[in-house]
Every structure is written in structure tokens, then in C-alpha cells.
Amino acid sequence: MISVTPGETVLTKEHAFDPQKTFTCGQCFRFQPKAEGFFGIAGGREIFVSGSRNETRLLCPAEDFAAFWRTYFDIDRPYEPYRAQIAGDPFLKAAAEFGDGIRILRQEPFETLCTFILSQCNNIPRITALVERLARHFGRPTPSGYAFPEPETLALLSPEDLAPVRAGYRAPYLLAAARAVAEGRLDLSALSDPSLPLNEARARLTALPGVGRKVADCVLLFGQGRWDAFPVDVWMRRALAQYYPAGFQPENYPAAAGLYQQYMFFTSGTSATPAPPPEEHV
DNA sequence: CGCCAGGCTTCTA
DNA sequence: TAGAAGCATGGC
Image 1 (cartoon, chains in turn cyan, blue, green):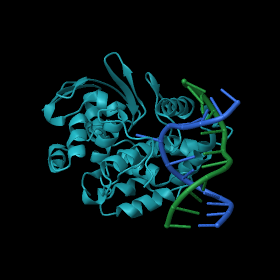
Image 2 (cartoon, chains in turn red, orange, yellow):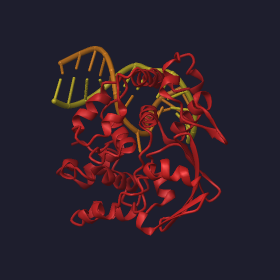
Image 3 (cartoon, protein in one colour):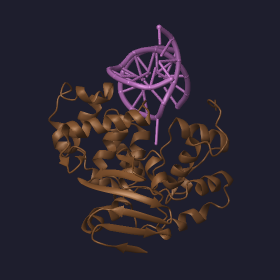
């Protein structure tokens, strides 16, 4: 059920939206814990999300919910059908149980591209700080913060302009991505078209400098709603090596591999399952 | 001080 | 086609 009043929208248990899990599972970087909930900015809009899996409270104008957040939180996609398919896989079943309440966000594609370019060889607190500085320096002000910058804004910057962000060697990658988007050489919105094969969507992203398979899959999953994308980072590689000695085939789950990835990643990152060995040599 | 963090590019065999 | 170094920055 969705009950909407002018300033607040309340979701109930069939939406399975756990703010804590959703905002801390590593898919996004602009929702900060604040007063028993999370404050976030996306699409130039502000929102405060609180409550729990079975009753999630969204503080925002009703028109913003209808026009933006409903899509951003992918509210109308039920998760049960995808969760019901994994009964035969013990690790996945446990991970899905533990990660119940995670919702895969549909973040803005350009912001997602930038944040995951910045994520490489980095850690979450520092990624968060980098993104925050980027917004503060180059984003449009909102009532109590800053929107993520537009590609057209970043495209005009020089590496020196970007110096205060302290993105290190990732700065030129960021500028190249902004220019590709601003100049129309890369149409991010086209990547969410389901008729575009996953490999083709990946190829368009990895054509950018500093964007490889992992970042591309993150952009497609967290920014395009492409659940066929399955990002594999160092943590996922360890978990997969430990629990799937014969290999895990995301292609077997073209409709939900990305959701399963988040369950696995969330689980491996929070030690709900035995800690993976330092590194596997396969 | 040295090592490493949610990768990627480049260079080497 | 696989493996290793180097990459800027900051935390430990």
C-alpha cells in the first residue's frame, strides 16, 4: 500500500524497502544517516527516508514522489518473483534472506557513471567525500545541499579546476566521461533499452577511459535498472570462489542476476556468512 | 615509514 | 591471454 499526504509518502511491507540496507549496501553515495533516517539528494530534489522494511516513510513533496522518487526507488517492481527462484541455491538463499529489504535504486545514469569511476581502488568513506566535494563545488544548490553536477558543467572544467575535489588519477576519467555525455557521443539513456544486448551496453561504457567491466556493470545495474548486469569486484570474486568452486553463471539469471549480486555483496561485506579467505588462486 | 583500498591502462611474455 | 606495475590520495 502507498499512502500519500502532501508532505509524506508511506510504503508498506509489500514494497520491502529497508532504508538502512538500501542506503548502506554500497550502491549509492549520497544518502547520509541523519536523525533516525537518511537524507539524500537526487535529481535536484531532497528527501528524508526513515522507518523500516515494513513501513518506510518518505518525507518529500507528493509531486516529487510521483514525478521522481517512485521511479528512483523502483517502487513498482515487486521482488518476490525474483526471490522465489533461488530456493535451490543455499548460499544465495541465505544471502537473499539477509539482504531482504534492499532495493536496487535507479540512480541518475551520469551520476552513477561518475561515482563508480571514482570508486575504483578506493573505499566507501572516501568515495562519499569525493562525491560530496564534487557536488559542493560544481552542483546547483538545493535548499540544504547541492545537486550532483550536470555533465555540461563538468565538461567545461580543466584538471586544475577539479583539483580541490582531490580525485587523483581518476580526475581525467571524470572529465572524459562528462565530455562524452555532454557532446552527445555517449547516450546514457539508450543503455536502459532492454533490446540492447548487455555486451553492447557494456562496450559503449568501456569505450570511455577509466571505465572497465566492473564500473560498466555498476552503472548499468544501479543507474539503468539493468538486472542482467552483474558487477564482480574483489569481494565478489572471493565470495564466488568460495561458494561456487565450479563457477557462478549470472547468465543463468538474466532477469535478476544484479539483484542477487547485491544480496551476495551485502552479505559478504557484513560477515553474515563466514569470512572469505584472503584470496583464491583458481 | 610501508601497505592497501569496491579498478583500469599499459607493458611484457 | 595472462600477469604485474603504476596510477593519486588518504587511512592505518
